[in-house]
Image (cartoon, rainbow, N blue to C red; front, top):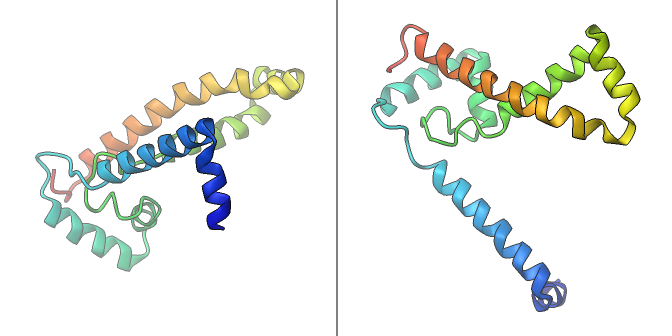
Amino acid sequence: MFQTLKNAWAMPELRKKILYTLFIILIFRFGSCIPVPFIDTQLLAQYFEQASTNGSMLGYLDMFSGGGLSRATIFAMSITPYINASIILQLLTVAIPALERMVKDGGPQEDRKLDPLRRRSARPAAGSVLLRSAAQPGLPF
């Protein structure tokens, strides 16, 4: 195993990619430790503790974010809005004929056509989650 890592490190292009990946992971881990300003994180942690014991959806979302939601970190939502938007678009291809034609006619280029739609629909999904969480009574915002 160490020989494989040594051989991979010897290739400049692969070393550059490994270092870039480690740097991105470091940034993400750092961002998932920084709390959002002006939020009482202790009250929020109590709320999430109560939600997780009840088995609510909020407890599951906190679990998927690695506890980032209960700590109110800046990278807490991760890629969840993008995944939700992707699933919703796949479901909408059955209901909307134009999307269905785009998928059927696209073939291997389907992702090129649907990626901008996924990205555009992920932004409102993330915004609606933030607005709903801020408007929910009992949260320490």
